[in-house]
Amino acid sequence: MSSEPTPESLKELGNKAVQEKKYTEAILHYTHAIKLDPNNYALYSNRSYAFLNEQQYYLALEDANETIRLCPHWAKGYFRKGEVEFAAHHYLEACQSYKKALELQPDDIKIIESLNRASREILKAHRADETTPWLGAGIGLIVGVCIMISDYIFTSNPTHPILMSLVTIVIAMVGYGLAKSYRYYTKASNEGLLEAPPDLGFDKECNNGEEQKTHVRYTKSQARQRYRKGKM
Image 1 (cartoon, one colour):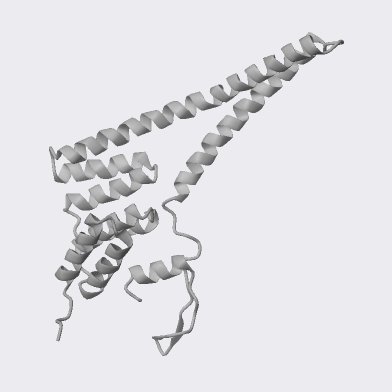
Image 2: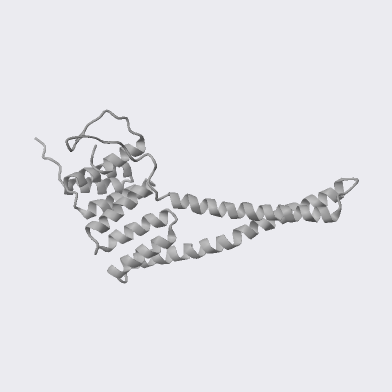
């Protein structure tokens, strides 16, 4: 008879799957291992990495936070959290996580490089916030001037220059507003990357304090969440 799998053997299977870039398979092995050993912080860290590569940022962050909760003095937990936040474009939060990891593991080259990378992205984001709206205004201005020239060249009775100037200014203002709205939309979209999907919750029916099994069809997101908690 084959022996029952152990958390360590399942961890090795998960690590092998990660090396082969089979991240979904790795998640299954790590989840099984966590069910057997729910206080093993390294398993949560590994599964966080697998979730990250599947672009499941919320679940990856959840596992990184659990890693930190179980072992608050392990630098890798904060580093893992920073990696998730960086991937989700939360560069300020990533910097804070990397700094905490560096406090626990000073002079770690990988952490230092990641911190510098996140710092550069913060500066790039600030520059984009400042320059993108004006770039939109510039494009609007060019469009307005082109319209003005076309009106002067191709029409027998050109529009009054003052009116065309006003039109050009309005187009430039519209360009500014659209570009600013685009930056706002981008930032709002990035904020949502680490939020829990709205369909993760599910109802529980209890009788005398005990959970009853019900025949419920779950969405993919709900199924992933239940599996993450070792319920499938």
